[in-house]
Every structure is written in C-alpha cells, then in structure tokens.
Length: 128
Image (cartoon, rainbow, N blue to C red; front, side, top):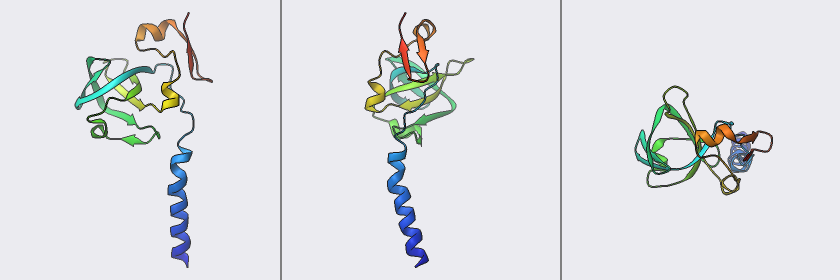
C-alpha cells in the first residue's frame, strides 16, 4: 500500500511539474534577444553572426529546465541571452515561449539596451 501511495504521489508531481514551470520568468535587464543556431558547440550563430558559448554556459528550455547544448542542434529558436562582461561570450540562454517572444520591443544589441528603459516588474522595454 505504501508503494502505491508513493507511486501516485510521484505521478502527481510529474504531471504538475510542467504547469508549475509556466510561471513568468524574470529576465535580467542585461538580457538581449536573438535567433540562435547551434552549429558546432560551443560555436553558435546569433542573429546571423558567429558567436561562442562561455564555458559553463546555462541553456534553459521553454519550461526553464537546464538543457545540454545538443538539444538545440538543428533548431533556430528565438532566445533571450546574456553576455559575460569581460569576454563577450554567451553565458545564459533562455529559449522563449510564444508569449515571451511576443513581448516587444526587446533589445537585440548592447547599444539598444543601454539607451532603452527596462521595467523589471512588467518585463518590458521602452524606447526613448
């Protein structure tokens, strides 16, 4: 009987996990947006330009779960990402859900992010 209850609890947790992951994610004000193509990790193409993932880069899927680089092979997802300050390597990647991708405008360059205003409460950007 104990095993049945434990199995039922585990099934409930597994079923509920994806729904719980649909909470609005809070992206940092340094997050930029781009189309990412995984070519030969850690080399990638970002917005049509060659880029590189930092050692230990974190890739989160649409459910905010950590993923390996290989998961994105053959895909061209729209992502938010952050760069390391010193090297310019990509340190964090979030594959966007449809409702997150619909939030516009979102900066695609450092220059835009430095001149636009970010509201962390609503996760929106305002152009000057």
